[in-house]
Image (cartoon, rainbow, N blue to C red; front, side):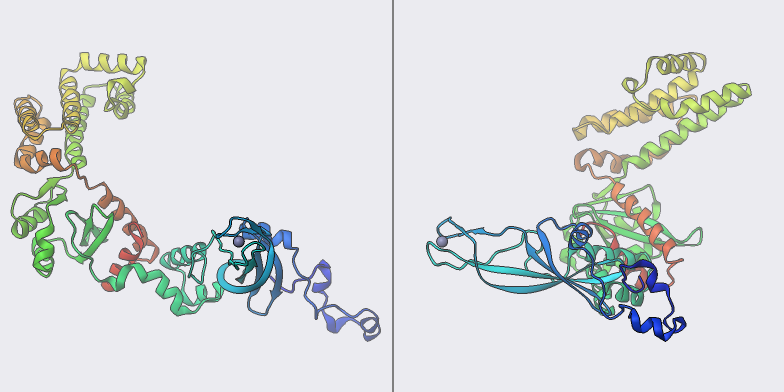
Length: 430
Ligand SMILES: [Zn+2]
């Protein structure tokens, strides 16, 4: 925004080019800024509880004076309506800029006098918190933009804040990157610091929905060393650790907590089965002509859904394919059974059912199914433990995606401390 001028084009005229005579006759009105329409400001503000009663356009910011729309309040003592204003007190809040000018809101909260009982109640606002000096929307916007990589200085200028405030708001929740306390249920996963090169470990509190820490490396030693650095009473609290089928994490957790806490994330188990199905599909496809193979590929996605989600044509197609290729029929049925297995409620029958499923796979003629049977046998106990605790690593995977985003926006974070701070500040519930 350049000079605010209601008479449009006049602002574009260079004063020095105008002959003195004309300038004397029609002095350019640059001294007094033309103010915005109050209705227009109210529309931009979006605070229906308030009306604008004044504005001051300063060199660095726009001050808006607001008053509540209600002209009376109900006396809290005698419940009569009082409309006599005794005094008012301004309170200021920083808000989002309007037309790129930082905005300061001045709320003039009034004190009324009750005619009946002489009580003098203050009015209160429902829109803003009692003590904050800024609006929530400003706070959220500043955090978000800083975490997305906008420079602190630029944000401070744009929103009329100090650089310290921008910094404090953004990293308040990260507590300077210090690890949080361990909870009852943990999720553990790895993410790439640099793709294919270096990996980090992420540990998440699954009950609170927050990351606890992220540390360098993904080897068992790294994880064990970190857990050993925690207090003993914190470690005693941990009952459940959800992991994918990673041997390093398994070994680390076993060393720290013994072998009763592991749970294998159910989506990773199903993923193994789906990969086996894809391998079988691949071998079937080799026996087909090109256009038929294409059709099979199209159908694959829909096949894994349960029968009631398919329409009649798809059901028939599935039936037809299964009739032609028994290998396909066997694998699809097995994958479906494995998926429904996770819906079970009781541990003991679930264990027996899983053993039966594994047995079925190992006796199959399909080589991919046999391989899955081997994997599941190795991880059998941690998989069965899912039935009792029902924790999955969905949240951890979600944070992993967010971390990828954070790293990409910062063009790869070199500084480990900085990375941890950003991740703890950004991921999870406030
Ligand atoms: Zn009263």
